[in-house]
Length: 60
Image 1 (tube, rainbow, N blue to C red):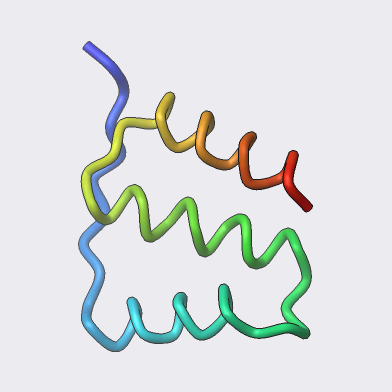
Image 2 (cartoon, rainbow, N blue to C red):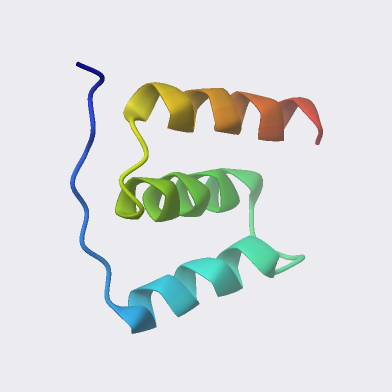
């Protein structure tokens, strides 16, 4: 079974992560981590998060 990290985020945490992602001055590593945390919070398996982040970094 694929590895899934259980993360429970509050609405405020989700808002802060989304702000970091959309900020034009956030470092790329912060944006990548924020995306990973949000995806994990949605119950996405780790391998799919890695795939999505690989696709994200390839487009930057």
